Each structure stands twice: as structure tokens, then as C-alpha cells.
Image 1 (tube, helix red, strand yellow):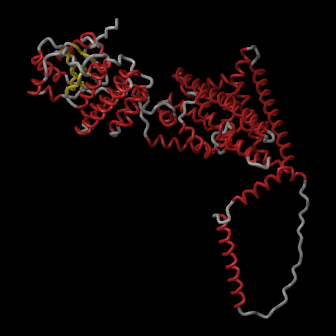
Image 2: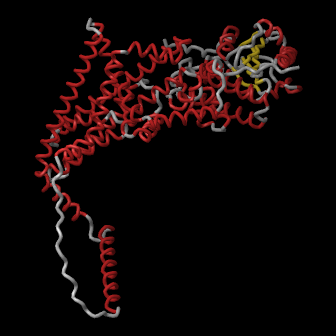
Image 3: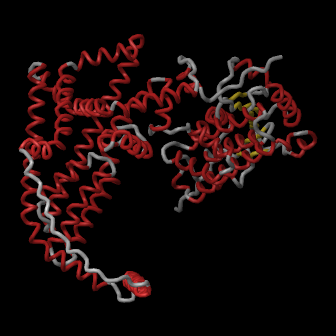
Length: 629
């Protein structure tokens, strides 16, 4: 007879890729190699195109707002382009004037630099490493020169001849023609100017034909699924626009304190350094370093002492710490959807491929890849590798820690989950599914008995640790902390039995913990105590309910036999509940499963079991202390 399929915990992941035919790994790698090669070979045209797309994302909201105010399509685009030119020319003129002013004042700082170099020379101790190394090199040079002279003296001397007198030759090049001078001076500027012009043309046409380009992309990407394609395009546009806006806000909030701080410190041209700091921060990693190097280097030359450089360095360190740890997390949030490692890897990859322009475009381009991975099944690996979403669900992470026999990290995961969710949700949504996965692997033969028992012991240890933490700080418990100490002195009203193996016992221990927190006396009983003659040792009085917990979805017959045995021992005055902690509910109706087990109650989750037990067992409340007359 064929074994029925086991329940699974990955229905969402299976549903995502169910509509896509499988793609071989070789075809995927070959496609990636072809794409990377095309990106490298076509960078002359792809870099301006990517820059134009980036600028169009920045300018499109302004164009849309002007069109809503009644301005036409072409006037709106022209107005935005003219505004961009005015802003760039204004910033360029300010930077040029500041650079000219700085160049005129540089000779005034020569004496301060010479004084600082002299101070450093005297500050180095005479017996230091630098001094000893210099003396050693000088001695070696003198010895080599003496050895060379001795060798020359021992060599046979030839008849002395008067050497010929050298003739002085002077080479004079003719003055280059004006065209060659113009070519030498303007040649290096042709490339950037041509790229800027090409970017400008692309931007204008993209803003003018925005809707038409969007329709064509929808037709190419997936006209049969317009909803998903539109959602992907909107998601990419939203994330990139928000990233650029937040980056602009952060850069402005960074550049203003830089300029103001350098003004009060006394570093010349603070406006120049503030503008450069705001502009260069658009370049990840390298930009902030370059923006800080120039004013720090200048601070060493403007004053004879060391206080100005120290304050300048402190200013940049403080602003970087505040920006990276407070400002960026607050403003960015989930704006890009990229993990920190993905940002670093993307910067290295695109810089290697396209140089400085690739570094500038690395984050927006990677955002597009992540969005494609979220909406295209074949490219889902981009979302997994580069996205900021957790790679594993909490229950899978917890199960992996148990498999690795790392209870400390599993405890940390549980504590992190408890910072936002209650304990019963931790048990039902994380620990129980993890134990169900272990039971599935046990049934498949992937886990042996020792591994299963070890995972069960680690889980019970985590439960005991959480109980101890509650007893140490009862004021932090949301639900009735007073009965925790009281329940230990009262007879147990509920027996929680792990019916078949250690995993079932761990599930029963979680149920007992939740009941104790609600003031219901509960204890965990191992399966050995309800087997054979050991059952007679259990007390028959003071027990109101027995819960048999199973993680095996095919344990109905075992539950029926054990229920019959317990009824024979305790009689009909004790209610029996069967708890099923499988990953998915059984397709059979609840009434049929309850009848098959012969139990009084049936629970499919820990919270469901707790609710039913509370209806049939009264919580143990401490007696009220009479007040003094």
C-alpha cells in the first residue's frame, strides 16, 4: 500500500515556482555569462543609458506634478531640464569660485606645513625604528662604495688617454600649431562632454515618451500577465525613487553640518567642502572618504597647531557615526530592499564592470535585479541572494539550529521572536513546525533515533530556560505570573504526555508551560510511564485531564490504544485529549478523527488545546489574604 504524502511547511515556496518550467543550471550559468559579457562590451552605450534612466527616475515625479498643474507634456519636460541645467550651473560656478580662491591662498599655508613636518621629525625618538633603519641603509651604502673603489684600484691600469670633451647639444622643438594645442587640451574633455550630451538626449526622450516606453516594456516583459508586469515596474520605480530621494535628503543633512562645522573650526572654503560632501556621498563607500580627505588635509596647513586638524577629524567621524547609525536607518527603512552584504557585493561587481560610473549606479541597478527576482520565478535567486528578506522562515531557522545541535543560537532566535510576539505564538508558529519537520525527516529515514532524541532534549532545555527566565522576572510576563510559584506546590490537574518519542515529549512540555502560566497545574509525563506495568504507578486522584500529544500524522491507531489503556486505569472521571501538532491539518473531518481516537477532546494546536483545557479545568488561584481590621 502506498504511503500517503507527508504534510509540508513550504506551500508558499512551491506555489511561487509552480507556474515556471524548470531551468537547468548550465543554461542559467550560460545566460549569466552572456549577459555579463554584453554589459562589459556594450558599456559605451549602456552607461549613458543607465545614467539617463536614473535621472529620469529622479525627474519624473516633478514632470508629473507640473502636468497635473496644467502644464503640457513638452513644456513640463523642458522646464524640468532647464531647472536641472540652472542647478548644475549654479553648483558648478560656486565650486569653481571656491577652487580659485583656494588656489590663490595655498602659498600662504606653506610655512605651516614646513613647521608641522619639522615637529614630526623632532617628535620621532633618536633610537627609533625609522632612525635605526636610516643609519643601517647609510652604512650599507658607504660599504658598497668603498668595496667598489678598492676593486677599481686593483684592476690593471691602461695607458691614460685624454677623454674627448663632450659637445653640448640642445634640442628645441618647434611651437605646436594651434589645432594641436586645442586637441591636447580639449581631447580629454571630449569623452565626458559627449557622454553628458548623450545622457541629456536620453533623459529628454525618456521623459517625453514615458508612457509609450512603459507600454512597450509591458509588451516585451509579459503582455499575458499585465498585472504582474505592472506591479514589478511600479515596485522598481517606487524603490529607486525613494532611494534617490532619501539619499538626497541624507546628503543635504550631511553637507550642511560639514560646511557649518568647518566654518567655525576655521578651515577655509567651507561652502566648497560642504557641497563636495553632499555630492560625493552619492558614490557608495568611496565618496565619503574622498569628501573628508580634502578638508582634513587642508586643516593641517591652515594653522600652526594641531587643534584644527583634530577638530576636523572629530567632526567627520561624528557625522559619519550619526549618519550611518541614526539618520540612514531612520530615513531609509525598507526603501531599497537590499541587504548590507548585497550593497557591498554590488558595488564591487559594477565597479569592476563599468568603473566609477558602475559604482554610482550599483545600488539602483541591484534594486532592479531584486525586483525582477521577486516577480519572475526564473530569477528568484536574485531576491534570495541580494534581498533583505530573511532567507529562511523562523521555523526553518529554528529547525536548522536544532539540526546543527546549536541550542544557544536556537535560544537566541526564540528570545528575538519573543521581543515582538507572545510565547504561545512562538510555540505554535516556530517551535511546533520545527518539531513537525523533524518528525517528517524521521519518517523519511533522514534522522536516526539519537539525532531525534538530541533535538528533543535541546528543545526541552530551551523550554526550561524560558520558564526560568519568567520566574526570575515575573513582572515581565503578560499573563498571571503569580500562579507560577503556586502551581509547583499543588497537585497536577493536567498530565501532558509525549505519546511516542522525544519530539512528542517536547511538544507536551510546551503545553505544560503554557498551562502553568495560566495558573493550571500541569506536569509532563514521559511515554515510559504510561507503558505496560508502569501505568499503575500514576496516581489516580487530583487529575482532571490527560493530553496525549502526537507529531506523527498517522498515529490514530496508537492514540486509540493508549486512550483505551488510560481509561481502564483512571476511569471515566478523567477527560482525555489528543493533540495533533502536524504541519498541516488533516483532510479528515474533526469528528471522524475524534471518533477514531476514542478521546473526549481533539486539539490541532497548542493554543487550541489551552482554550479547551481552560474550559474544563479551573485555574488554581492563590487564596486572598484577609485585610487587617
